[in-house]
Picture 1 (cartoon, helix red, strand yellow):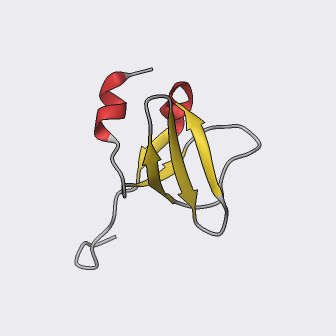
Picture 2 (cartoon, helix red, strand yellow):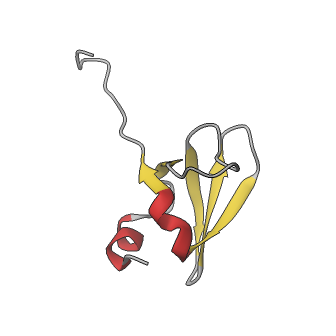
Length: 71
């Protein structure tokens, strides 16, 4: 597990799942708990899921677009 990635994650951060597996969440989620071995994410419209640190390479920060930015 990339330790630098874990250090960038914090409670309340918005994330998305970039994995190619069948159990991919449908929308963004919020990190609600971080322990030594797990990170728990509350996905919109779903229940919270716990991920081992080895799975965190699939999480990416959500970049919020401001209304003033042109698309």
